[in-house]
Image (tube, rainbow, N blue to C red; front, side, top):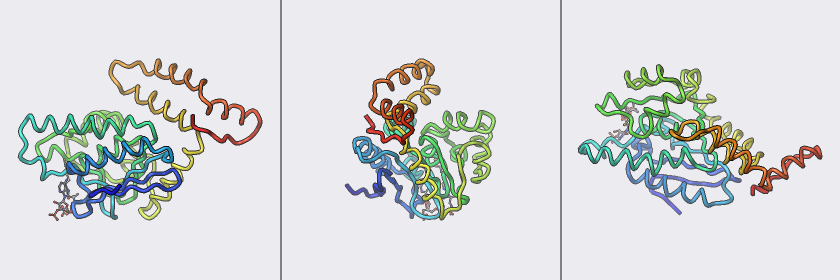
Length: 260
Ligand code: COA
């Protein structure tokens, strides 16, 4: 399947999803958001795919935001619909994805771009990355989860400052804030990210899926995360992965997970 604004390749279980609109610094227009949704739906079904890495084309931008030219003349209702649809169909879908999603932030991650990176399960940035939510400088607020996910990741005060000033922070400050987990030189970003994906793939993907669910429950209203953990822990005991993992340990062998 080919896309207009997206490249998707699968290398030994790692799917690389690259936002590919370099002339617009990979800004997320409607078509790109639709393609991301489509691509992830396919990746979910693809049993060969274990981990997803999302990045941007080029050496300048991960994603420089939602495409401003598409919503500049929107009404109140249209603005609300744009945000609601984006949440449901793309950003929440990624945050709750059953397989690990890592954002490799290779340059500007602004507005919807940072929101996309924050919807991923964790982030790795290159040294040239600049991250920010500049929406208030455009007279709007973040609309793809930024007001919720940024404070969850960096704390309320830092999120307030970043959103109020509409400023950018560099990769090292993002590391210090806990917004990204690692910083690498740009030319090493993919190799480093793939190495982490490789470490993840040695473990039980069934258990990882349950863990994503339980961790996310901590951030959902009206859901008791501890109950979710108890449920997921119990379920693990009924999987082939659990039998393989525990018997391999007891036999002093490396596990070979069937992922069932
Ligand atoms: N939406 C639509 N187009 C965008 C865009 C966005 N979010 N971000 C960049 N582009 C386009 C520019 O309009 C320009 O297109 P053009 O060549 O047809 O004029 C092209 O991408 C290159 O961007 P440019 O601004 O010339 O690059 P720069 O190096 O001077 O500046 C940025 C880089 C990231 C600082 C600047 O592009 C920017 O501020 N972008 C908007 C960021 C933003 O506010 N995002 C939040 C949106 S809610």
